[in-house]
Amino acid sequence: MLVHLNRALSLIRRKLGVSGHWSLADYAKRNVLRAVSFIGDFENSVVRDVKRLGLDGVICGHIHTPAIKRIDGITYINCGDWIDSCTAIVEHYDGRMQLVRWTYPMTSEVPCAVAIAEAPLS
Image (tube, rainbow, N blue to C red; front, side):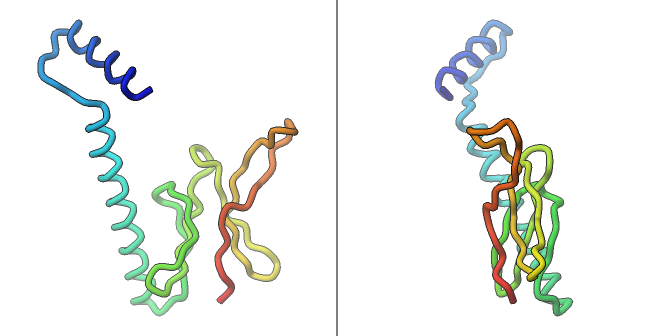
């Protein structure tokens, strides 16, 4: 699929008179690596500040990347976003935190929330 898209983009570039080689795969790889680095830097920065404040964990959602994980002894929870990943955080009565994804099951037209991760109780 990516090869076909790359060929189509090369054809369009030639028709528009744009010279030089350009690779969609290289472009995607560079940007994915940059995004992964940004997310890691964001998570580490948040965890560093949470530790400095003497807190046990953090819930945030700024970067739209859903996650529940332990980073350097801190519970890091990112709710993701409601538009792209269709994720949210649910707190249960017993204090458990779950990351859920809103989805349409194959057997139903009615959407439901499916748990995709859970934070350990402290």
